[in-house]
Length: 149
Image (cartoon, rainbow, N blue to C red):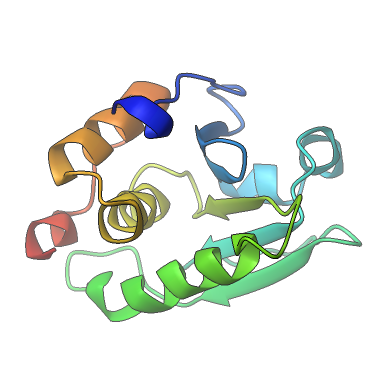
């Protein structure tokens, strides 16, 4: 990724990473329930992609999009909603809001949603968006539903 979309800041490979400064983070389920992580990174919103959280942090707004983690589930069905949730959280008139997008391990569903967001909303090519996500979170094998977008 180049220009204003270029990022290389990584919070922690184990917890989460900053994908699009200053507002878009990607991480696993435990980051979404970690008061210290959310507070340290001033995260105000969490988008759960198919993951069920049992612990939520006071003062953080949570939104969940149901989808199974299997070969027959298509993220295309929730991609538009996910992009709208991210946009609604970080709209220009909403200063200082930050969002963490997560699934259980942040290796398939949530990275795919973030790649779709970068492609559709930020105009970044699929190759550059995917390359960037792999750079900041190398553990991910992206979902096959990326081929459909």
